[in-house]
Length: 326
Image (cartoon, rainbow, N blue to C red):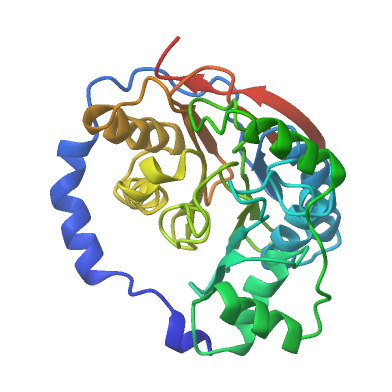
């Protein structure tokens, strides 16, 4: 299956990247990431729910396991946590009260799988893994994704918890939709892992913008937007307002910049520069994480207070990202 879904690498991208790199690396990039370390195995993920996710992923890596298994195991932790109201079970619903989920996963070979607009399944990342491993496709959506999940033995569940339902009913009183900053809890988990072999994989999963239009799909299930991996170079994942990431294919851009010589930090900063140059960024948060083959990482966001979890060198810790706005 992998050959049918492997991304084209080398020649063309190398030629294009060589031409565009000098234009993309803006003079604004001045700081190096003060928290950047080297070495692997390592796991990095978005937001505080990344801390327990990192632990689960690192357990697999420490045992000599593969990065692809680690990223899946890691993000399943917040997917199953009803207190994490932006991922999976307990996620805040759309404006009609439906919890709809998006997820993608990608391994070191360029093989990948994705689900979008999936309902009633607690672990969309594992359905995405099945799409990757057991179908000739990359993405399944909506009713088709649900049908596939049920055929593969995933139980159908009600993902709307009482806590989330209460929040939704409170919102219905005014039905005011303002997907600004992070007040609507659209803090996706994106997770990247570098295993003992030096192989990289990534995963991204979310219940998306709360109170969104029924049927809305963000960047999280889109390979190259919400997450992208090139095992020759590195990986990247995104969080925040997905529409802004989709418009720039941010994760692919950042990995391609690293291919052309940018550090993870430089690449993340240029990814944000693309957003603030052409979009109204003042009311929306976007954050990027990136790693390279050396075990170096970068992080950058539009606004302050984007934080991430890094498990490296035997320590799992939260770090505050640098940001465009201070």
